Image 1 (cartoon, rainbow, N blue to C red):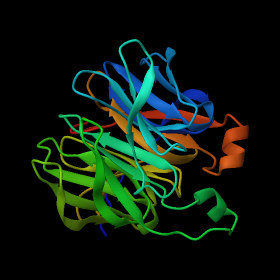
Image 2: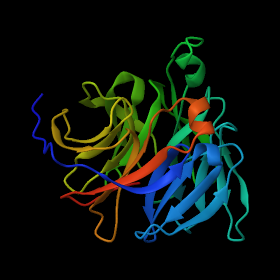
Image 3: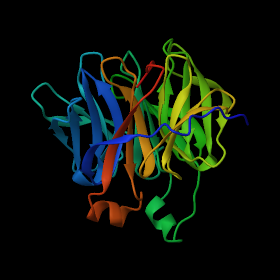
Image 4: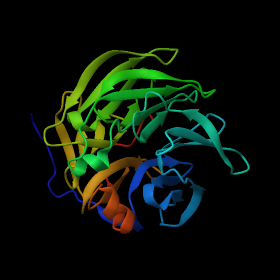
Length: 292
């Protein structure tokens, strides 16, 4: 695999004091993100001014918005998607069961309000201690009215997901398979033509985001880096981070600031007990595109 990487590109710390961040999104001029063990969704402006957007007792993860502007948020432990109403209240939008066989995970929402939601599939935290074994699980589709269905089976820890600008290609990170997997999206939201988009050597893809050239930035849960990958697997660029990288998003006024969510570990105990998580950022050459 060919690599054309600037070894000097490094991120700078933007925000500190997170437990474990996830689901960064650029929306209405602010970076939104979830913090699992703060049980909260926050947004922050480019100067670092942060505000609380929602409290989610079941641990928030993936974020997205309906066409009318209402926030959707994955409630991990509850295995459901919540919806924030205009008065600020959170209400049930959809259930991920029976297809989610452990905690809910990241999510992408399309331009009509259809959501595609991943889940762990097994007890990841018990796996760290040698007390559980990995298994495949399903990507879940949530239609705008809250109706749930299986979008795709047999995925190895479906995680970050992107939709290309025309809405016809969906790519999901299979964290435990070390690959990005693509599908063709039909008008009714069904997924077909499953194919490998990129095999990722030494990289467990967590959060991902798309740029205007059709390349995907991949947060590497196994290393302190975020990789820019072309279809087929060529590494086009790399940003070094100070800690393991778990999620990424292209934002800023020109969508050319790569925000990286980092931490020393994804293990539940240490992440819940400490506030060593960070958001880091780096200027890059190609702006963001597509969804999220």
